[in-house]
Image (cartoon, rainbow, N blue to C red; front, side, top):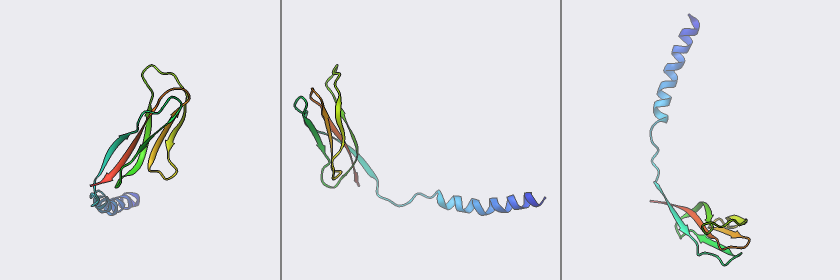
Length: 102
């Protein structure tokens, strides 16, 4: 019986806390924007840069259809404002995923 009383009291204490935690915080909504860089020269670097007022959250690359080449770099710039991509022998296009607050 003591265990049941303890559990019941614990549930009563937890329930109000969960109700408060479920309330949505008041924050600005973020919008994702995908920016594409210019295609590189074969073996060159492509850069996709986030516009002013946004911040980089990720990125990627695209090789031409049917291409089987080694991508030697696929990552952010040192200041995290752009995404770079480079392939060994073919052209590549970088993409940056940027977020802005509304």
